[in-house]
Length: 234
Image (cartoon, rainbow, N blue to C red; front, top):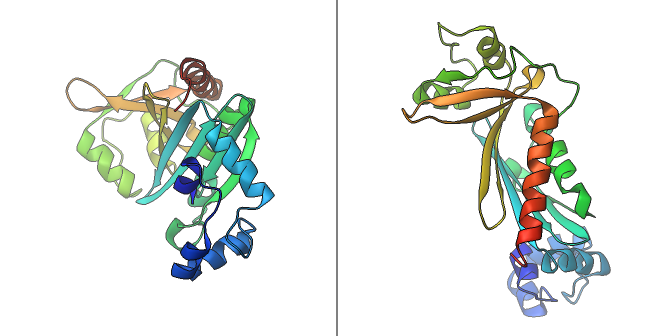
């Protein structure tokens, strides 16, 4: 449906409805189409927000092997939103639909794009910073990947207090990609330990740096604004 909207189709279509009655019933139950397969007023507004977009953003998230995503189409006035299970939902053990197959749709203002991403990833300004700002920890990439899949993987024996605090919290790992220039950053939402930026160094190890919530928010906002003003269309 989203791909159909982005190509400019105004209908799901009677033929398609006959071929896929399960999808037709699903669309109608959402109020997305009427009995003839035509999109409703709300769905046309959502489609308009997609077609008017100047740039896009995507966040891919993981929690202990469970995957989710958030997609944004950002224009001059509106931001179309397609959201899978949020960080908060996954950390509580909840997935939207069967194995996370359901998504939520919304249209927000253009200035709300960064706030939508921040809310979905669980960014919270009240969380304390663990350790000293500017401290960077290095972890073997294989160990890091095992920790992504299993929270019971032991903390490295040489870990300092900051890394221990990060390691012992539940993780929601997310990677944001913005615009045609492919701005890309990876973060870990580590609950009470705060957010950490992660990436590979020249030796192939993973580096982890604590990030103030305000810095993460400004990173998202600046990336979206830069892409929006430099891309005429996605």
